[in-house]
Every structure is written in structure tokens, then in C-alpha cells.
Length: 307
Image 1 (cartoon, rainbow, N blue to C red):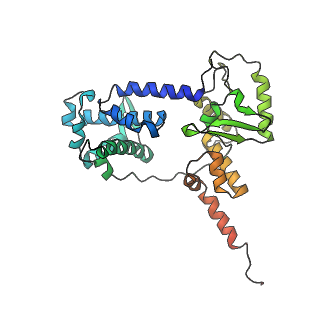
Image 2: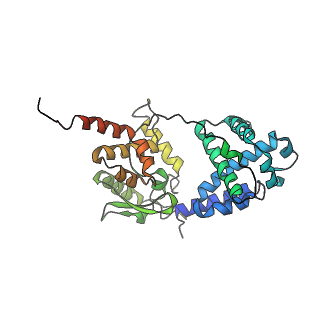
Image 3: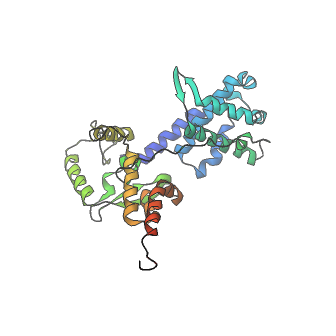
């Protein structure tokens, strides 16, 4: 029986997290059980990687922790740390060596690592297992906004590669996708996309999928479900033939679709719904420039008196 893409990814993330947990102090398992109900397996795995980085730093730089293996560090040691220790950790992850490779974290990366640490400390502080919460005292690094380059289409690349054959419905010209958090949604497509899909499906009929990938809509040259990285490489390859001035990614194609939809409708809530944003403020952030331009045009749209 073919495995659902999203279920397969969830299983892999759970297995990876279990492996990381074996390297962490035992009390970390309590934290992950505590947040399981309101976080995805992918989010918990990201937290696990961040916490492993934190304890590796302590084991290398903190004299008390250096005497113990990471898996032997007790929960009480969290109360030994202060704000300065957390700040030194953020400074450390700005540039460090791992397996002979230099790794750099700028504002966004450091913010994520601090957010993971805050969640970790908050859990044990609120359950009264520790008395101090130094992570809460450290402000998030100020992030510099990047210019948003816009081109493209609507769904996330992970949603695209997760599509199965039965998810496409030409009766309504729609595709059924699984959003972040596991929520299903129907996204409708136009005639151009419909024509391209029909052309592809004609070729798809002659492909022989590898066992376990029979239901996948988009197959790779190896007749397996396409991976996110494969789509990113395809976009990079064909975009470079059009322009070398801008870095074009699947996410930027998705952002462009949102821009075009907002310019056409002026409905920020519709754009948020189509793009699958759980918070409309996320959408507003990306399309603030368009909203400002619409307000500028409104200034001259109504005449109060004849000249």
C-alpha cells in the first residue's frame, strides 16, 4: 500500500527526534511530551536540534557541565545558568565549527534558537521544576527585513510534492492539499494550469512508479515521488535561463501569486485563505507595500469639489 507523503514525513521526523533525544539529558523527554499536543513533529524535531546545540555548547564552554556527559546533565543545572550564559550561547552560534565546517547563524537563525530555548525554559519554569528563567530575559535579535522578490504560483512546494493522483479533480478544477497542521483545503486552478496538468498526466500514464510511490502525482526521473529539493533545483535551473539578476525560488513564485491576487482583489483575507496563512497578519506583512499603494491611489480617487 502506498504511503501518504505527509504521514511518511511525520514518521521520519518522529524517528529522527527519538534519535536526537538519546543524546540529550533524560528530562528533555518530559518537555517534548508536554508540548506534543500543540506542536507538529517537524517543529519538535527543530526544537530537538536546537537543544542539542545548546547542550553541546554547555558541555564545551561551561566548566560545571564539562565534567559530565551531556546525557548525564541534571535538570537542576538549568538553575545554575543566568542571562549572560544565554547571551554567550547566542554569540557562540553566530559562528562555530562542526565536523570541520564553519556554520554561521544570522539574526533569523539566532532568533529561532532563542525561541526554542525560551519554550524549553518556560515549560520547566511554569511547571515549577526550576526557579529561574534566564532565557526570558534575553531579547530576540533584531531582524533586518529582506527585500521580497515576487514571482509565481500559490501553494507551498511541500504541498505540491505531497499531492496524490486522486487529489486532482477536473470536475471542479481543484486540488486537495494538506496544509500545515494537517488541515485539508481545496485550491482551485485556472485553465492554464489545467492544460499543463492534463499534458503531464498523459505522460504520467506511461511511467512505472517505484513500489510505495504509485499514488504520487509528480514523479522524479527515478520514478519516485519528487522531493522538495528536486523542485527547488528545477525552479533554479529554468529561472536562470530567464534572469540571473534575482534568486528565484518556489517560495518567491508562491509570493508572486499572492501579490497578483491581492492586486486583483484587494482582499487580504482571501489572500490569506488561499495561501494557507493561519494568521492574516502574516499576509499583511508581505503585502504591506501593495496596501500602501492602494491607499495612495485612494487619496485622489474622490473629488470633494469641482476645480
